[in-house]
Image (cartoon, rainbow, N blue to C red; front, top):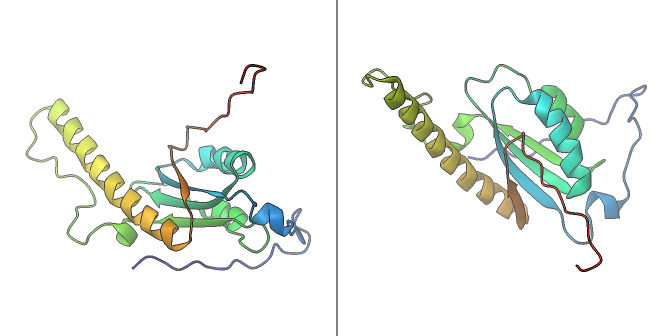
Length: 169
């Protein structure tokens, strides 16, 4: 049920990154690589910073993004830039709800029987947490099949930062 990886054509002639191929040790770091599972809604601008930061700092090499059904921003440019297993050692998958949610799971919460705004907000939050639970489970299975053992579960506005070492560390 999970989508298979797609291979993107190389960057076209004239593109700033045409002909770029990182050394094998950089594509598949000797200490292992990181993976990440992220749910997004209209976060293309945040992801354009998040991905390169974690690619270099972690090193992130597998990214699975669950796209909210209310999303209005395309991730195609980011996927075209970063889904480059041969050149960058990086895989980028964008999943919609059909990939990981059971067929009977409602795409949007039913708010018609909730009388107060608080109850509507609670129902919406509960629905999101259930989507998140299903997504993380499917993402973990997908990454396990790809032999990834280290996985980040962050939002696109959260960055994993290392503290600078001190003399007494």
